[in-house]
View 1 (cartoon, rainbow, N blue to C red):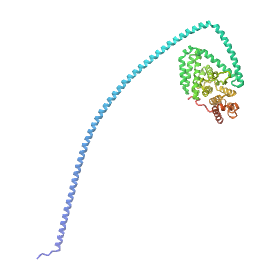
View 2: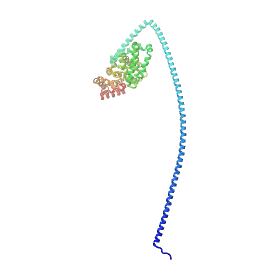
View 3: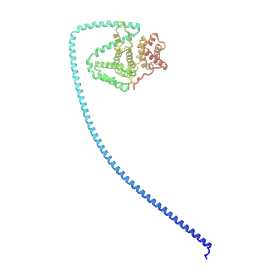
View 4: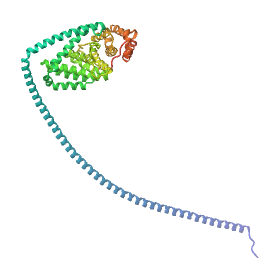
Length: 474
């Protein structure tokens, strides 16, 4: 008979069964942990192997890079050596060519100097031969003149008598015209006659003397160069004036050469003014400063300059002319200093340019304060008064405009309220209440009248004339 199952037996079996399942679970869990650990080890091993392979590939690539870099450095060193060699070769060739060019330039300079010296020697010989020929001709002429002296003397006396008669007749005629039409005063006519005689004397003594020209060739070239480079710079004006002063002082022991050079400087200044001042009115001031500096050291200069100014422009006196019934057009144009093919506008502009130089001289203060202008602003007062006392002509508004524009501020500074009286006369005569002869100029000279009217009205509003541009050297 089977043994009965007790509860204790059942509990034991159940407990063993639970223990068995627990052991199995623990065993499975241990196996799983071992598998995971094994997988981790394999993963770490594969990682190390992958890193080792990657490091190996990197090292191989680095070796390739270093090798390529070494090859490139080697190639670059070769190229640098090649370029340095080429640079040195180019420099050597350039220095060689430069030395060759320098040698050629020196040879060319020596050749040019030799040619110039030969040319100077040739000219000197030609000049000597020419002077000898001139002396021979002069001696021959002198012999002929001695033989014909008596006859020539009689002819000259007859011509002089005829000229004096004609001069007397012309003077009477001018005075009659001046009284009738108020073209010039007696004082102006006397000055005109004085400058005409002085010009004739200059022409006879200097212009026809070839020896003076040949003796002053170098000096005249320096004078012309100085006038050509003159600008409105204070230092440059003083420098050129000093050069001219030294030139004149070095020839003062020979009066003929001295006066010849003074006349040449005066003639050159007026010639430049005819050209430069026409295009730019302020160009008159550097020449004016130069004239004043020269005249302070050489008082004779202003007389020669005035002679040249009056020859080129009769309105400097001022002196008007009218065409006479028995006078040709060519003679009249010569009388008023007009060029053969010069139109009216160009003539007026040229005359005003010379008057601008004349006015600029009168209002100029010397660049050295201790000096005084020998032809000062009181002459501008005289000039304006003469213009206002003469019967106005077609050119009168242009002359008044030029004079007032350049000397107006200086006249006001010198004479103050007295100058206002003179300006008031001009303003009334040409703006406020002009007479019929002035009103007629509105038709014959409209542009000049308009400029003069604007200048006078602006000066009337401001109470003074503007300082002309370029008056003070830079």
